[in-house]
Image 1 (cartoon, rainbow, N blue to C red):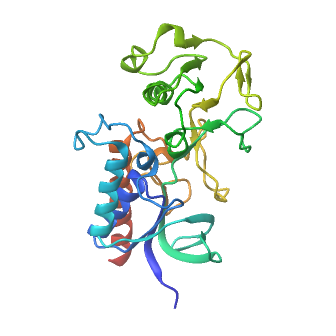
Image 2 (image 1 turned 30 degrees about the vertical axis):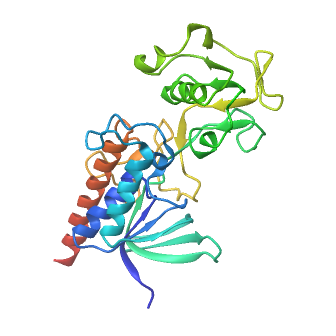
Image 3 (image 1 turned 60 degrees about the vertical axis):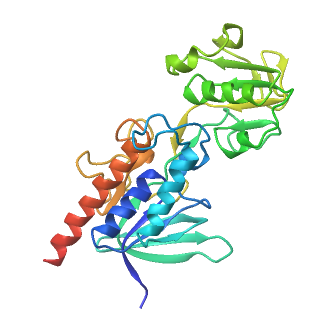
Length: 299
């Protein structure tokens, strides 16, 4: 007989890892599925100090993610890396998930409950969302960390924290010229204050990503930070309601979606201000709701 998991948690960022750890220590058997090769979500690709998490002084996002991975391993949780949710079918008491695994045919996984924690993905340039262009990097992470910035001209598109943090990063790596082009500035004052006035351009811009030009000037790299959108690449069922912002709608008290028995947590649902601590708290909320749900059925 096929194995029946108490819960399948899709996504091993702070929300999903937290939920899986709590479920395991509450006495349940969760399976943690992760599309990438590591635990930690966006934190696992963040080289900057995590100054917001009070339990992680002087640690980068990468180091915070490493601690998450250690806790998941210590808790004895089974993790499938490079595995993606393709489809979600069925309803309580048993869900069937089609999961694609690297180097193997898709498999069907059976679970009593499902937790979606697939996070967000960066928004691309309009009209070029599905294209990979030389020298154009969309969103923060490994690709930017690997760039050879020395002597290069860099245009940063966006007005949020990521844009301003990566301005400093490119400068520290020896870029000869770094400019930020923002429609509006949303970044924190501490980041904005460290940018030279001549390097910040606010207002409309003309961008040609193929020629790598902004307002007629050519750059070696275009770094695009236009915010985030819910990562719903899997085949979401029609019953999974989406809110007006484009994120998964959930019950405020328990994180359950419009599909009974399916929960959405972390940045996928944007239930509260997105950051590592709130994502982990979201995982706890879903784990406790599942505990109540499954315990009531066993009485």
